[in-house]
Amino acid sequence: YKNKMVAMLPQWLNSVLGNVADPSVDGMRWDLVSQPNFKEAVGTGREIDAHLLMLSNLSKHPEQAFQVMSVIASDEVQLDVSRNGRISILISPQMQTEYAANLPQFKGKNIAGIFKAKPRETHTPLSDFDHVVSDTINDSAAELASGGKDVNTILRETEEKANAALAEAK
Image (cartoon, rainbow, N blue to C red; front, side):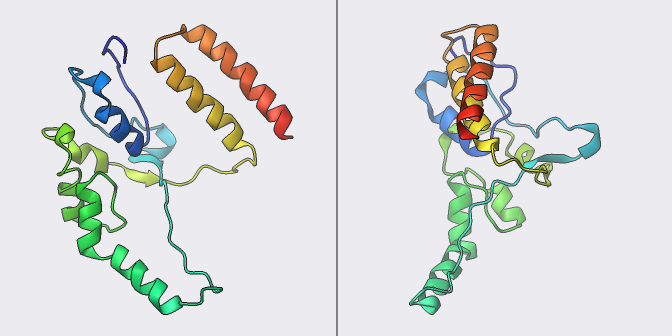
């Protein structure tokens, strides 16, 4: 980012939204494509990053809660969600073609590239400690992007921090 020379940044789409809204990327040439595939999963991208609404059986107002959920899942609201840079829960060509329509930084970008790959199945088995290591890696990635340290130092420090965090978590 510092030198505006990034070859590839395989991130969740919401992270991309935050990055391209950052003024430090002004002047950087960038676009969107589907992620590279592994031979065992050709045609797939990342796992689905699910955000859920659930109705609890403890709710004192289940009918009203369900009405709110129905509005959120409606075509109208989901189109607005899509136009503002969130992937819609609805599988619809219109949701895809109008994705990020309200975000000027996406004008002229390869929006179709986002939807070329099908979501990959969740990797299993999930460890109880995935979040411990992924948080450490995400922090280190941000530090690497800022250009303050070289790659080898970041890798060494990340391993040390991850091992320490795992030892503490166990």
